[in-house]
Amino acid sequence: MDRDPGQPVRTADGWVQGVVEGDVEHWRGIPYAAAPVGPRRFRAPAPAEPWEGTRPAAEFGPGPWETPLGRSSRQVPGEPTVSEDCLTVNVAARTGRPGPRPVIVFIYGGGNRSGRSSLYPGERLIGDSDVIAVTFNFRVGVLGFLDLAGRSGGGDHDSNLALRDQMAALRWIRSNIAAFGGDPENVTIYGQSAGALAVTTLLASPAASGLFARAVSASAPAFHVYSRERVQDWTARYLRLLGLDGDDVSEIRRVPARSLITAARTFDRQTREETTGTISMSYVVDGDLLPEAPIDAYRGGRALRLPLMIGTCHDEHTVFQKAMKGELASSRDELERLFAASPAGTLDRVRGAYSSRGRVDEARIGGDAAFWHPAVAVAEAHSRYAPTRMFRLDRGPRLMSLLGFGVTHGSDIALLFGQLDRIEKAIGASRSDADVAGALRADLVSFAHGSGPGPEWPLYDADRRATQVYTRERTIVDDPHGPRRAAWEGFVGYP
Image (cartoon, rainbow, N blue to C red; front, side, top):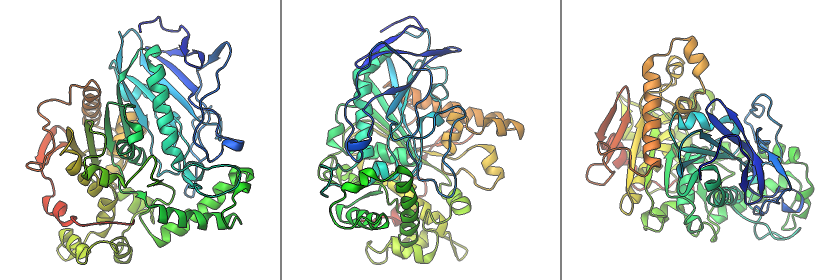
């Protein structure tokens, strides 16, 4: 619907008053679900509680509790601190644009341990387009991924809490976005890193049917959805760190959040040392939201048959190799554990494909195991049933190149959201960096409009495996690194 900027908006739960900043109207911190605290901790999100009067919506709500890796939680200046009461949504829209308008919903990454919507300004995502940007908070770390289903004490518990939060937010968007000028039938979900894992997982869930129209996955560790058996073992080990043995876990609802996070840091360190490359707090094949492993759903044509853009950065591994050691497998021993469930000879074949002048690039193997190979596997499978486009970013922020990271994990997000703009200007970033960001944004907006990124970007299929490569200009490359792609066939990874 068309409306005058600055006027209150009526949602299903009550009126909200946003704020106009320049030519963008923002509505921030709107609850999309009830606070998951007390008896609602470790439970599926409940509907938001309606309010009387008009609710101010100028400021972000608090972010979720995070499990930082050796650093304090990130925070935006002036933002409220973290809280379990974090399930809020934010909307940003350029003023003076007629509706109904396409909607892009961005899902943040952070290894399932951290992240918050306030770090990703919606106006940077959409640029000068008519698209409406939506971001939202969801539970991360132990509060979003600990699987207590089937254990007694304090009522029933639910699996895949973060996934349930994401679905609750998407239901809120579907029910309310028209009031902000958006089209509920034209919603694109877009995630990066762990947010892209959320995207590929949502596509594989029958329960997500009807909540969005298309999807964008950037650098998804798409295989990091685990069996019930592995997750139950991890849960038992985590509970022992809290002194909670057995099935009765009623006490966990009374454990302070900070104590939960402290134990989660210890547990995360232990599991990374034992099974390097896993994400111990992640989604589980629960027989409910996820009847099967997502990759099996894709290969069997049982994933939602919606248009998909999926891709990676050229040097995903370098930031982990140089600044986040222990996150990805990068040694022969770690790779042997990672490949243990794969057919005999798989690791040797992959090592051969990554060998040059007698040296095997084991760090790149670990990075490709996490990001590039899963993206290719999803594209190979999904393209048989739905329109699929593959991309790769080969040019990133100049700062990252100067630091020796190349086009590393997160380079696309740094470009799109301008996270390094101030430093980039100080070191004299070239105009081509802005051009790459503009090309990414233009293709994203075009895709959100439902028109596709353009006829010059062919659909991915098994004949060509056409991949759009972003450098100084867009280039189509057929089956990039074909020998490496073929070498990965049969790889299983951790169950």
